[in-house]
Amino acid sequence: MTDDQVRVLLAEDQSMVREALAALLSLEGDIDVVAQVARGDEVLPAVLEHRVQVAVLDIEMPGMTGIEAAALIRRQSPGTKVVIATTFGRPGYLRRAMESGADAFLVKDAPAAELAEAVRRVLRGERVIDPTLAAAALAEGANPLTGRELDVLAAAADGAVNAEIARRLHLSEGTVRNYLSMAIQKTGARNRAEAVRVAKEKGWL
Image 1 (cartoon, rainbow, N blue to C red):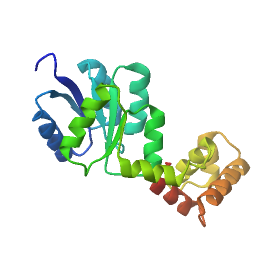
Image 2 (cartoon, rainbow, N blue to C red):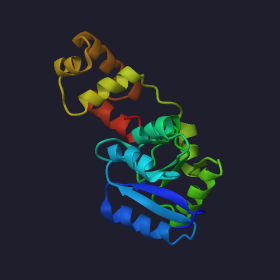
Image 3 (tube, helix red, strand yellow):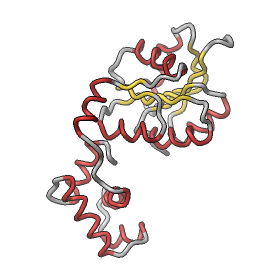
Image 4 (cartoon, rainbow, N blue to C red):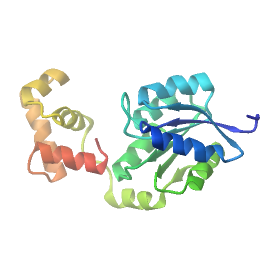
């Protein structure tokens, strides 16, 4: 590795995908994959240990999502750029990724050359967003759910009853019912299970 090579971390829980990305990026003469992790909660320690310049993160990983990891990097290693590369091209994910401080958002079916170029561009201070996804996010508008409505929906996702959700979130059962009712109404769903599904499909959860 030479001093002018970009130090990159790859965070992806599927080993074959991660290793394929590492191999492809390593073919680029100016990029060096210095660390690979399979869990979101391993991202920040690896970024700090290996003095990573660009972190390429999947979204759905055990331990912590890529979006949560991006927010940690922004707070504790602000010089590190973040590229989100995900299978899930959902407008809600894009909005949340940008709010967390990500510098780029790409879908994984893009050519490897696009990922390499995104790494270079974010280092130059540019923001890189998949254009199709950006258009979809603009067309869809903002997430209508409040933070508390999202908390209650997330707690309901595993089938928990109102009393259990109330205990977890330190709320009254009546308040939980109200939040669920508002979430169902705002998502246009017929029940809480459908509201959870809609929120996940939109990338809001």
